[in-house]
Structure formats: C-alpha cells, structure tokens
Image (cartoon, rainbow, N blue to C red; front, side):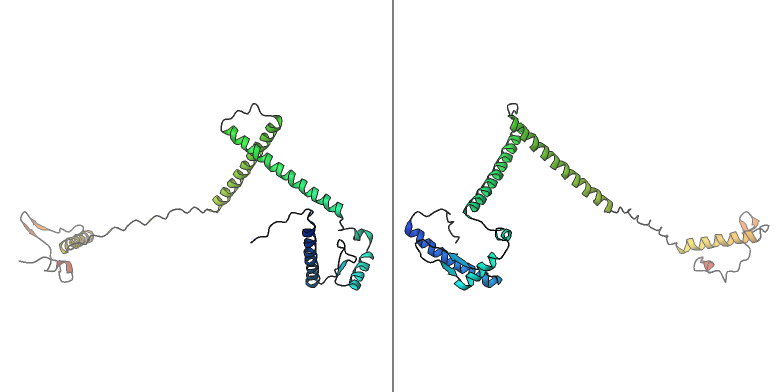
Length: 239
C-alpha cells in the first residue's frame, strides 16, 4: 500500500512536531550511515534540536571535526557550489512551480485552440474570434498541415523505395503440346510402303511402263516380294 503524501508545512501542534523531529532525525542518521557505507564517502551530520543544549552528531565528534576541516580547506567557490540556505531553497521551489504553471497554461491553450479548430470544421462561425484566438488557430492549422505534408512525403519515399525493390518477372509460357501421331493401321502402312516403292521405281526407270496391256487385261511387272515385309500375304491374302 502506498504511503500517504506528507504535506511539507510547519506542524502547529507541539507534541506532534517534537515526535516528528525525533523520528525524522533518526531516519536522517540512518540514511547518511547507509550512504557512507555503500559509496565509501566521508559524511557527517550535525542536528540542533529545539530546547537541546548540545547538538546530535554522527558518527562521532572527532570524525565530524575532520570532515569539517576538509570542507573548509576547499576553495570558497567549491564550498558554495552546491550549498543552499533556506532562502535559496524557497527560491528554487518557487521557480519550479512557476515553470510547471507555464507548462500547464501552454497545454491548456493548445487544447482550447484544438477545440476551436474542430468547432470551425463542424460549421461554427469564426468571424467573432479575438486576435489572440485567431493567431493561435492559424498557428495550429499551419502545424497540422505541416505534419500532414511530412507524413505524405514519408509515405511517398517508402513507396518509391519499395517499388525499386520489386522485380517484375515475365510469365513463363507453357510449351505447346506436341502433336500426337495417330497410329496407322496395317493396311494404311502397307499402302504407304507400296506408294513409296512405286515412286522409287518411276524415278529409276522413267521410260519403262509399269503396266502392260490394256483394258481389263493389265499385267503387273514381276516384283520380288521376298524382301518386302509390307507385301507379305498377311497383308494381301491370296484368297
């Protein structure tokens, strides 16, 4: 469970203030002891309490004396470099709060201007705007347009770089199917062989008559059928 935030203000109740002082002083001594042990540094604490004749020191009076002597031996500029009194602390707190206030005012102004811009886009008349509001609105619109242009330029650059990396490959055409040779019947093969043989005989003997006689009595010349497989009786039966 988170601790309740403590209000850093003077405690008006005496008993509560004394109890808080003792508790916080003890915690301060513990933190300084841890710092000296963990970081191996020389540190000391001197706390003057209300209505106490002697201050409470840590770790001891001789050690505190040595640390103070070393501090005083440093140049004055180094001594005051990080030193802060009550007035300086308050000035620092005030400056920090003022900076936070200015930051919050800027954020509120931007939100009001953005709301005004959206209302103008929705159809609200902007003729009655003050000079400050009109100036802020013009600045807001200019910033939005600039952001859109930068975004468009980035998208164009990305598209150009991606288009250069794309390799266009031409589609590979499938080879044309080969014509399927129709298987010939034995009769067609024999007729084709006979035609080739007759053509060869005509070329070799152009003046010889391949047929003798006329009319119905036509005698074919003698042909050796022993070496011609296409004229086998299985293709041309005698009966």
